[in-house]
Length: 256
Image (cartoon, rainbow, N blue to C red; front, side, top):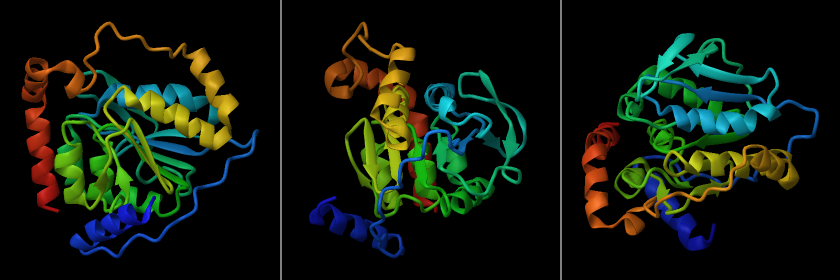
């Protein structure tokens, strides 16, 4: 982070009444043979792919130590109706983690207001080596006060409108590292996030091997993955679909 960005971050944090975040060294790589302790948040209305993509890449690093965490154990419905099964609760999730991860989804605004979820994230983040998210999960981290003064990204529909309300400096990038915070852009960027984090956790060759096993070599049928590439008509159609999420997130950010 250059000086200009750090000053902007400090101003953003101060606007929320928070102390400027002090620079923190990036966590060290975890030795081979030592399981990575990972907790991935589940909540009603999450986007299943935000969880399933990173989980598929990171699970090999965490044999017996990857926890899918929700308020209550059991099935949790995603925003398309597909359920994922929580294996731990806020109470039973280990206290010390290497990676704390938050997905996005249509349920984001509700989680931004949920006291129990925010308290859980603050508690685990205080000791986690890496505090991470995909898509609008960064807004939930932000609502917990965990991105004030940090550079971060999110889904394009909320990145510029909501992250500054949470004290964060928005960055238009697929994956953003700032000290021990790692945020990814919308849904599909969760795979880029997981590979980038795997490289920091266990080395580039491990991440490259995971990428090959997943055969992650995308050649999408259309060049429409960003508003600039998609064009005005397609972007307006997407904005109409995403409007309730955007309005809800802005409202939740403003009422913190």
